[in-house]
Figure (cartoon, rainbow, N blue to C red):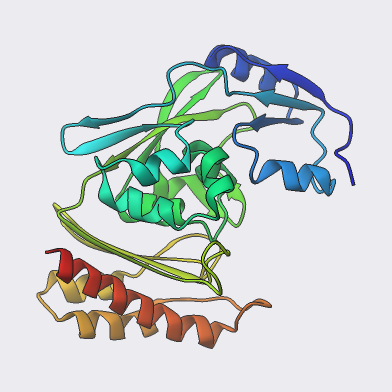
Length: 270
């Protein structure tokens, strides 16, 4: 199939993007890498009347260290994230995204805005307490990653807002593990563990509609418990869903194993 007819706007500034989206009255979409949007357009699962191309908007393609965090522009490609060494956890997670062609075109902002439950970067963002910069008609606001994701493919962004960048704190220690049927497939379970200044974060992606913090496992680690005990705490702390790729019980078992592997990864790096 082909996409339904739409008006195409090549925006030259954030202000033009926001103005165009506002004029579309909820019927506009942003095009960045297109790796998530173009397939659903082709299947006519989405029929926006206006498509706003943001690839010419300046100032959103940098990865910069700012104190104890790394600022990443919304148009930074996954391949760039995977190659940079300013934030090793982001590099590790980005390297798991799709295949080369997808990483070459896909963007940080697109991944966060699409809010796919199986995507790697949303899980990392929640684990690191990342903050996302959002531009809209009323100016610029900052939203935490935990407040950005409302459900599968749903965010708290308004129809006339766009992500311009995100700030990712640098963890003291970290680990990452993912289960997929083949490298490049959508993740069945992703585990991110990070030692932050105020304690541990244990986050699972792919198990439900949004990344899940497993606070029971975090408490075990914060209290000095072992990695094995923390992984065991995941079984009671996670609330997985079932789908055609796996049952809730399968995901619960794999969540325990992925957290165990991520913690082992963290110990090896330490």
